[in-house]
Length: 135
Length: 219
Image (cartoon, rainbow over all chains, first blue to last red; front, top):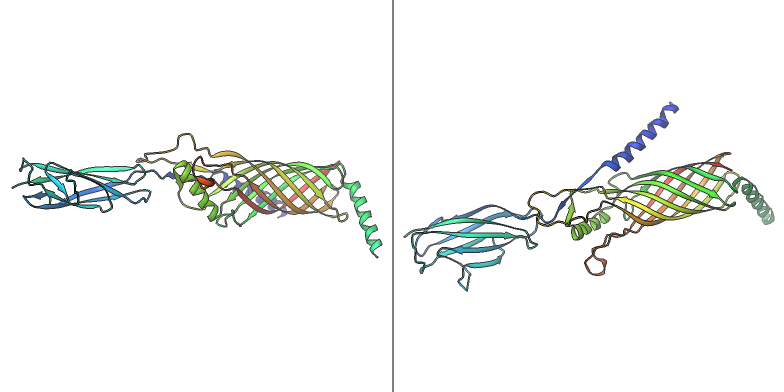
């Protein structure tokens, strides 16, 4: 019995040490970009004087809070864009309301909104959503 | 009565001097870190290695240690390590209960106070290098937009030292068994290149271990 105890103890010790030496602890970068899963405009077809709400669904793998940039093209205006230049940066809400411009020369057209979700550290994701204009 | 005690003590020291002077002790150590400020209790830590001491006289010896340690980090130290990783290497630990290994190569001075033929308490201080392995598996999944190139060395050598207290029991002529408690202090050397006042540096590491040893001696 005593003869077996020593090899068992040594084997146990070697196992513990070996397990510790071999085990690796995973690290992942904290600089992963946000990921947009969907951008939805509702309604997707708007007439003169109508508005539509665009909503982004995005997550950040690192858990960073996201901000959103909005870019409106082809006859759309952004609510809250005082300059009226079609750009709005650093909003905290993932939803934004867009109006149809009354001065846009091509009434039957396809407008679109480009949205960026940013983590504030350099990571971003962007996507476009189409909005149909009709009279 | 006090004179008798003094004479007895002197006789013990004289006997021990004949037994110990010039003796070289070599043996094995087994240590277990005690959960404390930097050592966690979520895993079992362990240390094992060999030590050698050459006694130059009854009370003083010099030697070297080669000891492998497996040190599980405490929650506090792991948090500091995670902060260091985030700030300097742009990565973070996944999960918890991180542990690292250290291979200790140190020289030491041992001071022995023989109390008789069988028992000898001692103190020992040592210093040298600790080869640290952080045991990291760095992954870079898709979507990663920034990382540190070439800055992720998992293995480094840090300066460290220890102080130990122990009690040897002379079981037979060439054989000593004993118990010891050791306090290790390792300067991490992992300094961040940015941040004020070392806020992003990896803190130094300390560990208290308790263990046992077996030594064989010869003249």
